[in-house]
Image (cartoon, rainbow, N blue to C red; front, side):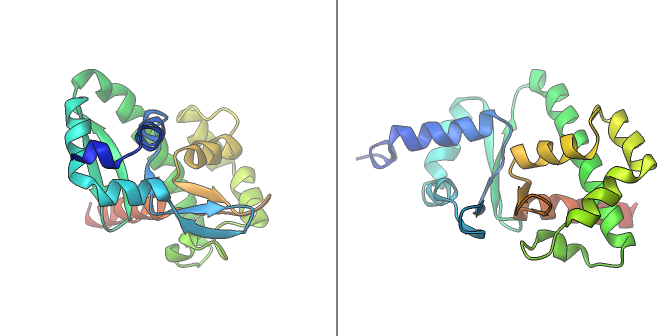
Length: 189
């Protein structure tokens, strides 16, 4: 009996689809019906069968990376032809996170609050971000022609941010981890 016998093909396919759409798989996902974070069954499946999935993705030419600090998984492509697209996505994510982090820090709030469903960014924050011409120019340079809404959608589609209602959003554990890494790099540079 191998790990393959323990894992339903539908679950394996669901994980694969998440990675193929550029998402990270986070430990907790936002349940908008209950307005709370809940355990992500795909994360638990990856975690409980880590060696199986690492081998599986290695056979597909990728590396399954587990980030313990941020409690998430992502795929790192092994081939060189994926490099340019990956770099573009990473750059765009970094731009958005830096703008959010800079805005939030300038408002005198601790960046940790960006990762809390009861805190994060509210309607006033989103309006202030959208109304800042410098931020809009930076976002346009990163090819977010529609500005803040398009940039936030980009993070949301990758599980780096969750929407906790019409005018509220917060970073996932992965989004907060990446923001903190950018801050660390900036402070060391």
